[in-house]
Amino acid sequence: MSVVATETLRERYERVAAGGELADLWRRLRRNRAAVVGAGIVLVFVLLGVLAPVLVPYNPIQGNLNDRLLPFSGTHWLGTDELGRDLLSRILYGARVSLQIQIVAVVLALIVGVLLGSLSGYLGGYVDSLIMRCMDILLAFPGIFLALGIIAALGPGLVNLMFAAGISSIPQFARIVRASILSLKEREFVEAALALGSGSNRVMFRHLLPNCLAPIIVQSTLRMATVLLTASGLSFLGLGVQPPTPEWGAMLSNSRSYLVVAPHVATIPGVAIMVVVVGFNLFGDGLRDTLDPRLRQ
Amino acid sequence: MIAYILRRLLMLVPVLFGVVLVSFSLLHLVPGDPAQIMAGEVATAQDIARIRAEYGLDKPLVVQFGHFVWNAARGDFGISIQSRHPVKELLFQRLTFTLQLSLASILVASTIGLLAGIISSTRQYSVFDTASMLGALFGISMPIFWLGILLILVFAVKLHWLPSGGTGSLRYLVLPAIALGSASAAVIARMARASMLEVARQDYIRTARATGYAERVVIFRHALKNAMIPVLTVFGLEFGYMLGGAVLTETVFSLPGIGRLLVEGIFMRDYPVVQGAMMVVGTTFVLVNLLTDVAYAFFDPRIRYD
Image (cartoon, rainbow over the protein chains, first blue to last red):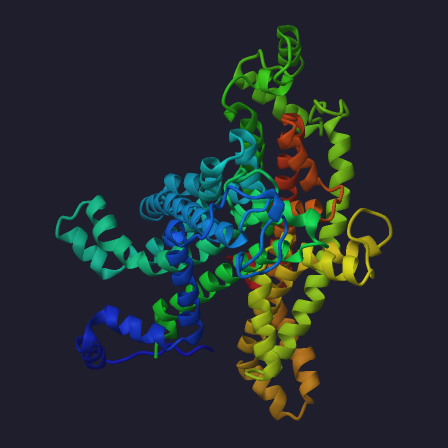
């Protein structure tokens, strides 16, 4: 049987008064070494993506055909690809493109998913059944298939990829928010708010949703990893980001023919994807351990 | 048990209806005239009119949907625009291969995942435990297509032990099964470890140890059976996700599966193939989830009464 750790009111007061709730959360997060490593990776990834236009040593789109498939060197730190383009520049710009895709897709999924989940959980009844059946339908298509179907209808490209990845992520947010709302809406503070004359909108947005922030934050972080894998997978298939825009999955696809003569071209984009996904997974797991009250001591 | 299965089947009906609706909608969400897109850029007005009549695109949307549902129920998904073969035949051939690949992958995933998870739980915080959980983390994070490329580089190109792609004997399935099964092995390992650790804390396990049973007996006769119940749900889910991952694996290893058929259909604007593939995969996934739920209820009777 798991033990639910509790603290007295006085202990909680002293802890929070010592530095506030956020400072307390930060202190506990810092004690989780894996989460700190994950946060570090995510931070580096975001910085590289944001500063890519400043950091790139060469134009990531223009190449020199005389410099095709060069190995690591002082001139090209990570070598060059099959069209003579600097690999380091394309990796950095690829980080920028991936970051854009992740942010747009996750924000889209978050807004729509939280809205649907809130309505479903708070209103219940037919609304709940209708919304959850729609989410079940979206979840009936495994993994990348739903995104493929959307791309099939709308066509490949960066914007459609963001949209497809976002739509594929909506059910996860909706379910999590619904579960949180269902557990919170019977609590005394909601009853008190209603008794004081608060309308449904105020109760939902002012009282319920702020208390659902923890699972939403954790899901957003973990979802960033999934979206990166989905987007790079679709680009690998040729249905995502279109050339010559650098994208890590597309770079892997183009490099397959040169696996023997230049394995670094097929290895480095994959390492980049894996490291960033590990970072988001570690950070997300760490946030879950920190924000989940059942694991607090 | 029968009542539980019937309840789950009833809940399946709206979901399957939704799968059919989404598959039908794909063609009609395409910007522009679907008949013109299917006919191609160099098609004449007569070609477009023929396509429109052949695929019933000149009828009202509701009538088109009715025909689509009726035909789908009979397994008739139309004729492929590219190959002119019945889509049903193409889907059946390709789905068979994808299911073989998924089964091989779940075998790989369950063998590695269960072994790693059980050993990790019995040697908590040991070097093996740390290494296997780290391996699980990287397994979940590694893109399938990149792992496939690495496996080809090492085992096919450098060592010449296994073929790099194509079909034939079981040897051709080894590398694709490892690539596709690795992420699921990681999930199963984590789930098995967590589940075994949870079960190991139970009073009946402490009693079993106190009565003098050997550790092996305690683990395999008492702990494992109970720990497997939540792991069983993961098996079912992972089999379904393997259908999704098969798209990328089939592309890397040039395998004739349904995922690759879907991608080819998207590139060729062969919408009957795309619709058929989406419907078949969606239906398969839903049925696999149903079987998993039924199996879960069989092993844990408390579920039937929820």
